[in-house]
Image: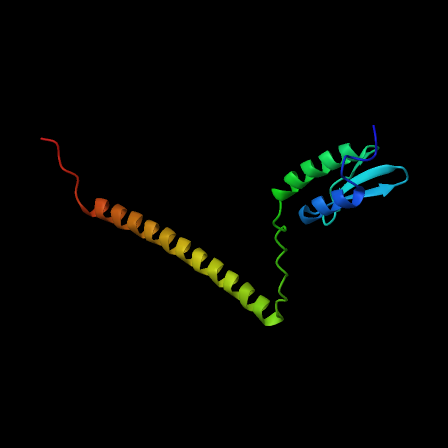
Length: 129
């Protein structure tokens, strides 16, 4: 096939695809189609300018779906020593409160059993008639 399209040159093809972030470059006897800003994606190599232009248009449509930049990671805030100590103390206090509540429930259940056993001992059993 011919390297020239009717009415299209490499510069005209690049000017058509540049707004979409796609670039066609001539490297060592072949055309390389790649994204200009997204280096993480693979480039496409061909010997024909028409093929490179059609692939560039397809890449432009594909790239239009992902126009938003990925969200930046939230920078980690440096935590002061005092804040980490307070957080630790709050966790320990919460554990102590839970433990105390469990023990109070356990004591209440034991007290109820004692009350029930003492009541059943003090009340005489009915005699069968």
